[in-house]
Length: 292
Length: 292
Image 1: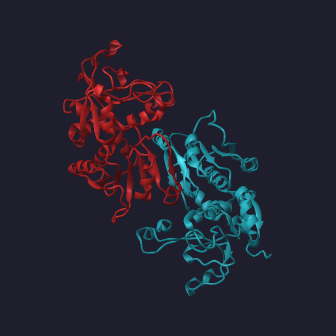
Image 2 (image 1 turned 135 degrees about the vertical axis):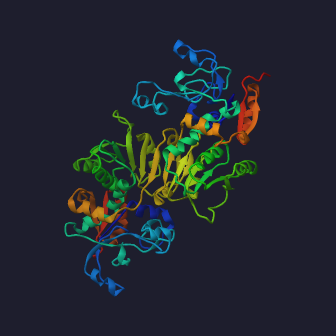
Image 3 (image 1 turned 180 degrees about the horizontal axis):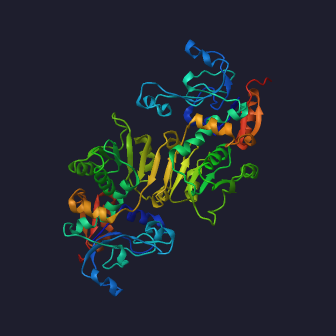
């Protein structure tokens, strides 16, 4: 199975100038290895990290292959992805999926890891007031992960259905079209809008000296007045790939719940309507074994 | 005396929608106080902090009046500034100027404090490679302050004369139009361009997981593709007013040298040509006692 991510929709718009098979959120069974030393993986149910470094630069030496200048990224940059029956990946990128995580949930390991990255980057204490701007798949994951650090997490969105999911997950909700609530601006605002104007909107909701975390890679430019960053001394932190092991823990324990986010499981030949749905829905998953 | 700052030029473009007397970098002598308790200030040569808080909010209680939502800012927001013979200011905002600092140098206390703010906000260690984007007044101040933390500071500009000043100050220099140097992208990039495209340019020069410090308040929007912030996990920090006491120390000791930056001392009635010069030159100062 493989999930459709906001980045996949951006690739269609031209983001990253990618040509090839997209798909970078997946679960599958190891069928074959090219090196006998990796044979123990055969038959295991796995997901995998998507960055493949050169193995020679300083970043790779530090184990941070996601910033290797020569990296390939599965389904995003220089390497075919998971919207296919088969996918190849270095064994070092694999993570076994425990029985407590079913296939649909396993598809969320990669984006949940990306949400976990936030807590590696910024301090969020128990008194922090956090807003997640965007009620889509990334917003609902980021909000659940941030709730581990503070009880005060509000999802700001504009879709009744998605805000309903947030409420059912026990998260605070509000309308993103609205102005700042009476309770004041937020200490931390996560931009998970997937829209070019996300940063501009986030600046309206963050308090002076607050932090904006940017989680969306969006194709194209947006008009931005940068002076509010300076005047309010805001810190803006770009946030990308995160720790798979931590994500697997959170999904296995139920600390992050993803089943309510699955809006459709489609066969690959239904790709046109599946991608159309992915623009509106929370999570569309391809079942790559489902035949026409 | 009072200095013309990039923000003053932006006010003329419409920034902050200010109506009144601009000017927020100044030195003068206290002539009169409204409260007898402040009489000890009379006759002293002073400069002053420019934010005046409400005195009742949480920010003011914490001594951070520059983020009070109801603040006035001398010559920028709701309060007349220093391009005048007289200026009024709460006594608590005053700083006496020591004899080691002459009048022209004293005009630089406020912007030097703003440059010092950077080192309060971000860690800069002895091995950090720093670029300051912009060879204007703020760039040349920020570069000198950052050199206190690391020897590897490069001013990137596009004016032969200003880059010559940087070289004479012992700073590294490079052309801002150029691409990234062979030595690689920088750990820290300070945007002191005073231009809307500053952030976009800074993103080209900063390394993955590096820090961009934004020092310019610029009126208007610029087109920005935000994905490089996310993909490279860059941290962008807005930076505004800083510690006057530290700035006075650095100017008194000569650790920060400003005399080479003074390009003209004008009388107030010469304001039109003075402002025109300030667009090209490093620092234009008004001598407010000079008569037509």
